[in-house]
Length: 95
Image 1 (tube, rainbow, N blue to C red):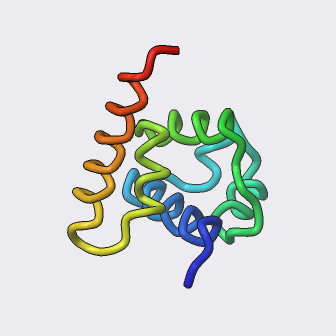
Image 2 (cartoon, rainbow, N blue to C red):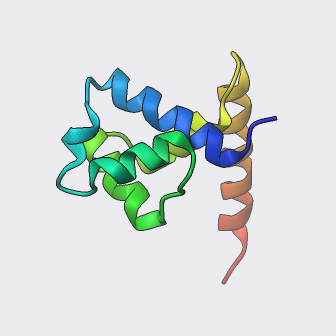
């Protein structure tokens, strides 16, 4: 079974290539070596870095995370329903 780091690596590479971007296109937010390490699964991004990477790819940061958790057909709908239910429950609690 793949680790989340490995799944994120695959998702990042997939989104990047689907957007027609090279590792060099991230020069404003990261070095090519760092992007390579993320795509090889040897590093994990911080939340700030995740947001920056998503910005370069013009996707929502949650899209990158969701792509790492969605494997086969039907998983996306299950994931979105779970997130919708949990966020709704959390928002009903008065802080």
